[in-house]
Amino acid sequence: MVMAHFVENFWGEKNSGFDVLYHNMKYGQISTKELADFVRERATIEEAYSRSMTKLAKSASNYSQLGTFAPVWDVFKTSTEKLANCHLDLVRKLQELIKEVQKYGEEQVKSHKKTKEEVAGTLEAVQTIQSITQALQKSKENYNAKCVEQERLKKEGATQREIEKAAVKSKKATDTYKLYVEKYALAKADFEQKMTETAQVHEEFINNMANTTVESLIQKFAESKGTGKERPGLIEFEECDPASAVEGNALMQIHL
Image (cartoon, rainbow, N blue to C red; front, top):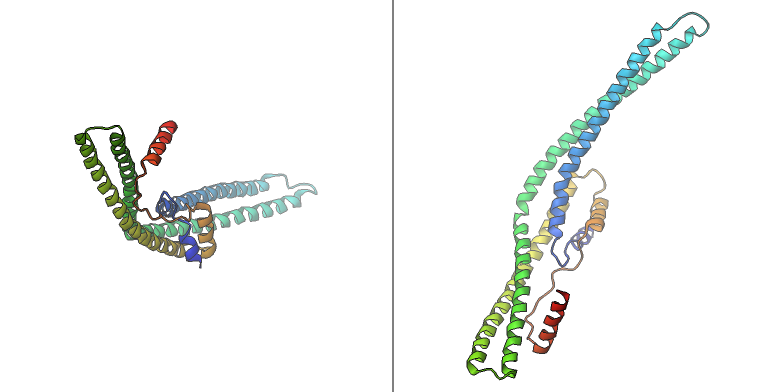
């Protein structure tokens, strides 16, 4: 159930879900290093504080031991020494934690390297569908432009030679447009299959590396980083309507 929810959040019209998944995995290494640096800095501060408290405890012996207040110095010395030892013990635990974080980071690097190799095909599929989608849009625009041009020549009574020349260009644009529609259909199928596989690989990566509840991590990540639930839609060849194409081109010019 969680897997289905996870996959459905990383489609979207720009097909950028793979990039989000990959970089989230990559940033895990950065986060691990930052955590180790933070704990190391905390240990340094605690160690310095412990030394200062130990020094302060020793100084208690230098104060006057005369008068009714004398016994209190022993209390101060003992309590300060205990406090210094507590902070020193915390330093030891923090140093152990640093080792664990570093070990976690090393395992993360190994897992990331393995995952990177496994999803190489998905990266190629993402790049292919993005490239074909752009080419498809351009070919559609060119097809409509050539169709409009051919109709314009007919209405304006152009010579037969001009009309035939425009017809050749229109036929070429039509064939190119249809070709990219077919290429897109193939790229779409490959993209969806590989993206689903990659989402499974990414979930496995999280399962292996996370110390907290896996389902909550996946759900929170999907909710905060999701790129959309719309899978790439089908694109079919659209017969040119010269009137609509002219109007559409006019609107594009206005926006430009």
